[in-house]
Length: 181
Image (cartoon, rainbow, N blue to C red; front, top):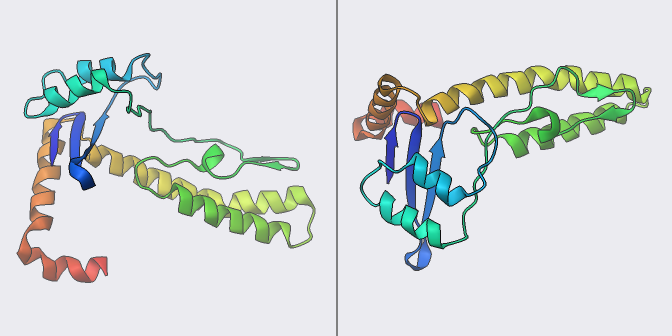
């Protein structure tokens, strides 16, 4: 079950043994982490109804809260001399779930370039040149996905919800199956 308002989302997923995983996602202007995750969640979601107040009350008592900021790394250079950055150090994406795949691909490209026997700075330059367009494309896609994952306005939220209902409609299977296969 998911409950959304502009800029905020609370999602509940049943687990084995009667447990429930809860994911709160919200927009905030700062990447600074709060001193108290439970207090930050309580303040951000204080006007949510349904079961959210009970969950927040439980969160105040428990310590099993992981609170983190999601962001991207955008650097003009990844390599300098014989040093190269790899993975989230220079290629971070946030929402799309592509970080591990992108890091493994980057490691393969880096290994291939280093194996050519060319001077290391030359090989590192080719690695960066080959990967940057892929990373920039993935980061742009990821920023667009984040806009729809936690829409900032009522209009975008309404459009997102309508699209989800449409995709979930049984008559859409014949259209979507070939696209997703």
